[in-house]
Length: 307
Image (cartoon, rainbow, N blue to C red; front, side, top):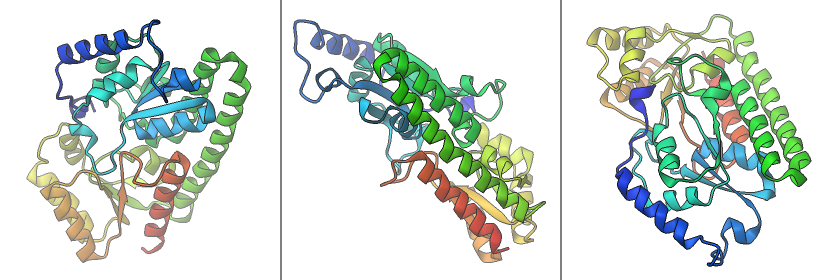
């Protein structure tokens, strides 16, 4: 959703200046700083969020160091404020991984400003989805598999001697996703025709994979996508679906709360409709994409089992 792109506070000029300073510090006349990728011999990878960072880490293993620009689980990715160390990390990168599709345009801006000619992986482009469609492709498990395979390919070009290791790591990661895809599909098989509504269309691809019907009013979803207040009629419609217990669950983005989403959660709690919290980034203490997504799939399955 292009209007919900993550916003940067620093000026392009300021970042450009910082990138020049970093480039100067990394000249052939100066030794790499202690712990820097060049000093460790590891491949420096930078991701826009810790979701894609975790995928890169799973594939790269011990051969990479991964820096995720957005990794604070309490932060709203749509209002991220940049830090000087972001430009520093990008100046050292060999591979960058980001979501694309209008979600994290700030990241490509920062990469371009850094002047670093790193290999780039745009997950939305890898997905093959049409422009203007739901950009939250990290909830589309087949896309995540394809991105993992692409990461293995690009890392193999950077370090050909480790190509087999990267490919093996990607296969192991993909196997975990295959199990998760089957786990999600079982939800719909156990509850055919079950309807759900969401506060934001972040997990829409996962709900489709689970065989669930999205009953969220279109006007409500469109307003959320455009970062505007949903029309009163749309709010009333989704509220009625919840209070009338016409849906099996409310799926809520726990990282973004508004008066409307809070009211919907309160209505669901009062009506006895389960609320399933999802997040845009990995929560505190979770570093594995598969573990994170498994937890969300299991929470969804558990919620629907209660209705």
